[in-house]
Length: 168
Image 1 (cartoon, rainbow, N blue to C red):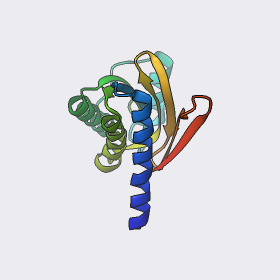
Image 2: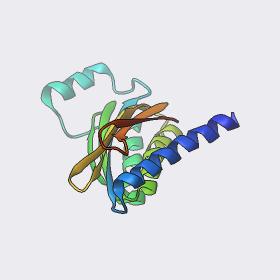
Image 3: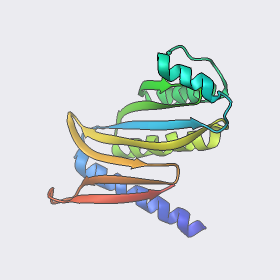
Image 4: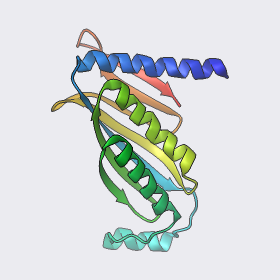
């Protein structure tokens, strides 16, 4: 088990060094889009249909939405993130945008996933995806779930792509 944990950290270090190469000393920006679902069917399908048909934007507070709000507050305060939530009573997505060094950004990504895994009883991470930006330029993309993230970045030669598979 310990060797798997060590291997997992090695993969994150490789990603971090590739991001440092791409950033060339400048701050990067990460955009993290987290899709969450309720771990219980507390909201009910009838209520959800009403949300979809009428696009109701006021939100009935329940345990799912309270947990998502706690995650949003934590990430916004801890990392000075810009946040754009789109949450319904039993599912939704939250987009975070954070600027910083490659080391800070890999920490943000791991921390968001860990926060959901460790602090949300009524919400589960369905999937996540996002981008790395250097200024206005797209520098990389990633996608995954609570178990594995695939990151695609330009290789050193600028002609090929480099793929990182990160196990959580």
